[in-house]
Image 1 (cartoon, rainbow, N blue to C red):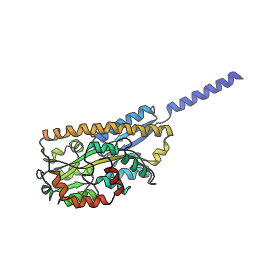
Image 2: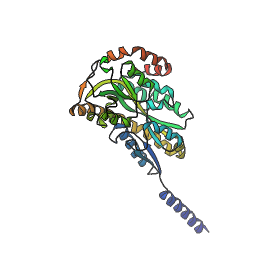
Image 3: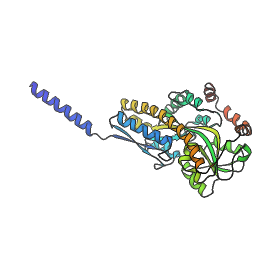
Image 4: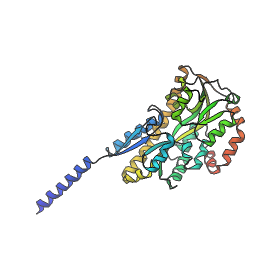
Length: 327
């Protein structure tokens, strides 16, 4: 009797192990809208590797770059619907779901990497604030971390930019953000809301004169081929939210959730380091390819838009208080 019970137990264990070994992995689809060489794409790949190793292949993240699973504006909606598992969504796009994220779109509010790290890195107060807000908003999204796009610069095909007055009349692509559009209008430019995936073609076809984005993104998208002038305006610190569909999150076991979340934070450290390395290299790369580099008078820009900036800050007193606390 004892032998038969032991044999049955051993067989049950073997069947359990066999079933586990051959169980289909959970494959999570992650969307990103730029080439695989840019920092956020590299961060996603690093995260995918960590998750695959730490779950022994039970959870795998498949990264789709270059907007192959839709544009950035689609990612959050598709995650809500459960048709996409993970999206890297710029702060400006996230304002459609959490309006006060628009506060960090205000130009010249965050002015150094040191300040940005205090606010966002790890469990920084802004990352924590917005993660709690997203996760408790009932919008079917889970925020795992806030990564870095970097300080945004300005390129165009018309002329070098040295002062605020040089910006007037330039037609440029901007994100669909009232803050971004209002800022450039205050400078006399003609902002056009357009997805980043359409910007290069817009420049080729002369529908727009310029774009603004993080320097590593400009370099990664070969902006030198369609723009001659690069202005280091540092006008805005841009962040990107790593969000997951709540349906997907709930499919994971508590242990898998822990691994996915902790690995996202670890990948965020790597991604920030990579972004800054690429940002430094990108300036050298773009100028070596013939772009004319200028260091505009930022004070002239701030002066020209001072009233606009104060109006924007008055809209978000709680966020401004957090930001001011770490200056």
